[in-house]
Image (cartoon, rainbow, N blue to C red; front, side, top):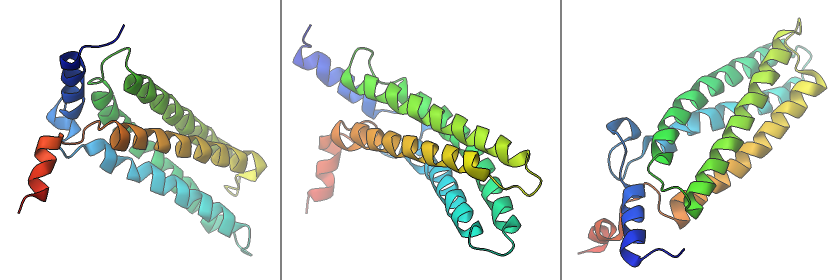
Length: 174
């Protein structure tokens, strides 16, 4: 069933407004800021794993990778709470809501894979992730990349939590 123009406009405006101040003020969503913590930490953990493979004493790098995964897990939980607030503003049955749910599922999958990777590492005396830990990290980073693409779709293509065009026009006035 197609939406009337005013119905679509109402849903669009709702997706631009924060559900709560915890999600960030209008035009400044916190989710986009918070996701940089797990993305950065998990990417750096993988780099530490690669560097460890070229070291005579890889243990400090394995320890660093494990710590970064833990930081990423904590950051992911915080980002998810705020992301759920943003997701709750998206009207059910819409394309953007389906994208948001897929984004959330991919992030959940990546988080669980990194959690399992951390468990694998913690069972090793040296903290060595082994082949399983590395495969888990790679798979999680692939999911994270797909999720990031979908997050960009919601923000840049569909304008979720982006100021409306009337507000944006003020930036182009002389």
